[in-house]
Length: 328
Image 1: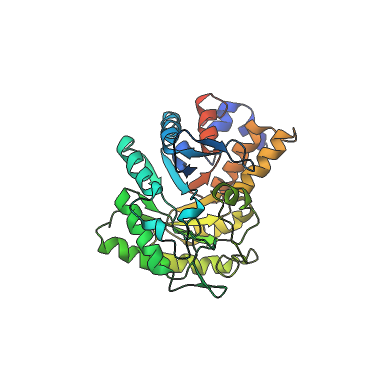
Image 2 (image 1 turned 90 degrees about the horizontal axis):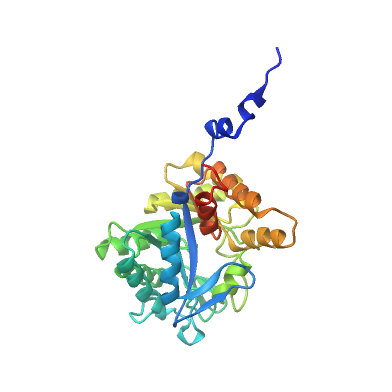
């Protein structure tokens, strides 16, 4: 007898009925770049369709996203050089526009979930995620700075702390600081397996946060390694992480699957700026069809095991669903 799997593909209704992987807007987190000032909307040239927003205009963008079903956002500050120094003190300064923006957004949209970024690089005159001394990135001396940053963000109203720095022991340190200061309900999404990737360029353009000297290979993971990701995930879990993240996503689908198979925690994946920019460039050159290629890329990340996807395509994906281009 000839076995005919194609019977399960004969119509869109049947294909949807047997679909194994479904990606909903509720699985997505939308990254947003924030700048100080008013009436500012500047496109990131290396990441078309994404902007640096002042808070007044960003509120309208968030409202539009909510209407499409996107209710989770990760905020990144583009900090003016005059506020940067070697110890990133502006990161926990009460006058920090980023902290003020968090308060305003949560006041106007209490239903949204806001995730932060905890690392020194947006605020550091050295452009590194940790404290630099004599050309070295100091691990233990960085932890108190990250702790102060996390507590300040929690005080502003953040829902999920996102330590992206890759310092050893920072999850446990931040968890303890949050608990001591009364923020036991504030979660931590650890950048557990953050690789020293070539695909972060547009993001660094958006924030002007590239290292002034050297690279980040002494603290971010080697792209050649996978077992190391398991070790990092075990440590983050022990230290109190609530979510584990892999970054980037598309080139690390095997790592997403590996952590999903070996952890009971929710798995997040960051579909990074360079991955999105590549697809956009191919679309703009007529080499790929956006309406099919973009959802396929996101679906592959979900299929690999990601419960949550951070992606610059979040709003467009939700819009496609609302317009009937994507059928769930």
